[in-house]
Amino acid sequence: MLTKEQWTRYNRQVILPQIGVEGQKRLLDSRVLVIGAGGLGAPVLAYLTSAGVGTIGIVDADAVEMSNLQRQIIHSEYSIGRQKTSSAIGFLSQLNSEICINEHPVFLSPENAKDIIGEYDLIINGTDNFPTRYLVNDCCVLLQKPLIDASVLKFDGQATVFLPGEGCYRCLYPSIPSRSIIKNCSENGVIGPLVGMMGSLQAVEALKVLLRIGNPLSGKLIMFDSFNGEFNSIKWSKNPKCPLCGDNPTITDLSDDYGINCETKQIDYSDEWDLDLETLNNMRPFPDIIDLRDNVEFHGKLPLHNSKIISFEEVLIQFESWDRERLIVFICDIGIRSSALTEMLRSKGFKLVYHLRGGISHWL
Image (cartoon, rainbow, N blue to C red; front, side):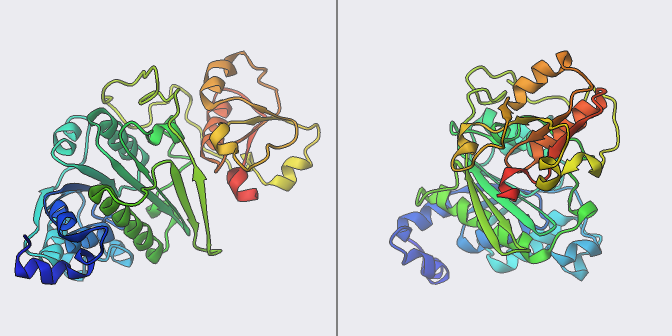
């Protein structure tokens, strides 16, 4: 049974028939790790603490800065210069003093990831850099841990859930993109309430997974364009060719380095390589359009005229035999894989390679 204080505190969710007393007891017995006590982590930590998740771990080695306060709502001016994990605990303990909060004031690395992640039932990613995102994903797959993932940039946010055996982040994005393509919030900016919104969505999904209720976002990527007030969703499925969780995985342990390990000459990415749809349609001679989407991403979305379907992995195998003067435009669903391949081939001496900015989803 719940104590009188617990009944009073959690009453509004306990009276939901999908949760009840047994569900609340399950939450109190759960252990959740939140990686990053920043913009996404702030609402996640606040809502999971308030909901009564019994043990919460926080991983973050950074200190609070003035620029964080625009969106990281669990920190305050009094916390500037203080360790983020310590600042978070100070805030969360005032929300719910009965919750056990574990502090991990370190940067997650291949050396410590398994030890830290292995202690928890569910992992929530709140980081804003790709090396850590891939490290967390790989560790969760290897340890069979569910992962709640979200990301934000400028006015755009996206979120999904990766359950053991049902696919992983590498099914969507097989390789770590270059830093010159994908910038983080400190470089490109972000609107504060959007971060809170996506973090709150992560908290909702975490409660659903812990309580085993509803339909988690496994196999569905939710995207929100806050500037235009538009929600979209893309169905995805486990990729049998995934290098990590596929039928014949080539990644069987954590790498020593999740930084940018390109064997290509590093070059500055140029916006001139990004095309809009009108420019693409007016190109003469007309380019070879290589569509990187799989069958799941094609659902309900027509291919571009005269495009060839070649997977991301197949391009990596084939491109060395291609003519370096060949006019090529890569397209994918949201533009990440196409931009990554554009940069890579440019660094390999291909002078006429471009990609469709924003992918098919944007131009639809």
